Image (cartoon, rainbow, N blue to C red; front, side, top):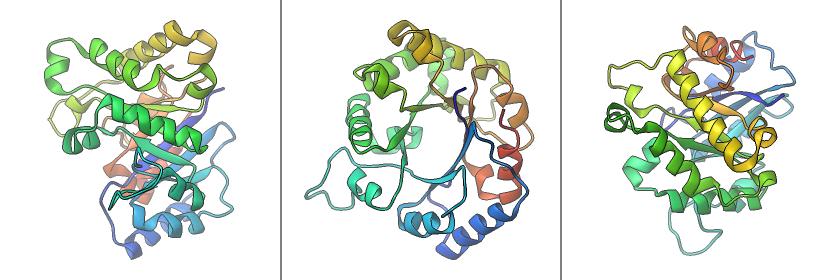
Length: 253
């Protein structure tokens, strides 16, 4: 059975004391991470080491980075390499989040390079894809997401692809006042899995965890995660509240 994942994306939030309190509050809540489940905390770069220490010995809960460089090392002031992440025992990294694409102009080709870097250093990439409102309204979402998959992932071998987690972000449903239903989530997740199946075969496609990243909250997590092709969520604002994120963890299949 493929992993069911609750991934918290803290984005650029919290001081170190607030971060430590949130982790301790989360660890104190009554959740059980089962063998087929994984909880990730994608924290800001300065907190990676401290949060990793706080989680030491906690089964099923790991730290993730929110980004990485497409370069291994060198004169790239302000960048963070996968080699640095690996030296901190960080085993997951978010790649291609919609905010990175929009605000930092990250292309599909650049993200393919980051995917390669992560895999070469035994770090699991959480690869984000998804369409904006104008794409959805023009009913070209499948073509758009298919292109993202093709240009960033399809150079991988089946064995490499099995090490990637995919997160679908319906950008059109985040902060727009529009809402994506659980059926719409399932529809796109099924499309993504069918595309992977066409390229790599059904067996490989069925091993890939596909997360939903569209304003997941405690109130809607169980319904969304109940969909057959939804394997958990990439959670933003709701992950900054220990009780709320705990509810989301307990909603995993």
